[in-house]
Length: 202
Image (cartoon, rainbow, N blue to C red):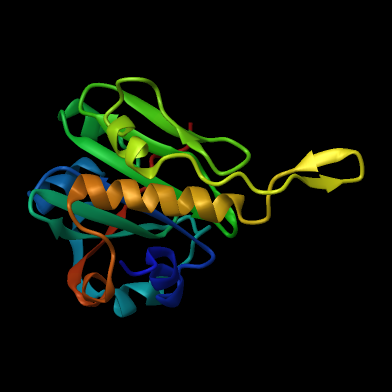
């Protein structure tokens, strides 16, 4: 299996990305549920979409299209992560990975009824609520090999590659659940780039 994170980094996503895997083959419906302006649709490859790459921008854009049989993928190109509330309201399962620079957020997942988190422990282990939809796949991953304790003065700090280990686990989970891992072919496919209007400030 290819190193999925290295492929994403090679595509220019090192400063951060949000990937959302949604269990639905209806990509247009998924785009609408994520709040996309359907009139803004631009069919393009990832290289073209990346000309809009601004991880911290106030303009939200997502590159959305088929991922595998029965699954759609939404890659946030600029702006904040897409809001997933309407996915749950529609009864759709999803997983969402988010990174900013070297920081890896916990994995957000929804089973079509409720949402939850697969959370990180400091030594690279990922845990989930018993009975959650990701738990069987986490058992496949198992516990990472415990690194040597890293100390800074009298404090114990996270191992250097903690975030990377957790990210690889999250990418494994999304690949196993959706039936497809990110590879060169995935990166070369065309999907639809949409603008997602941000909600008005309260």
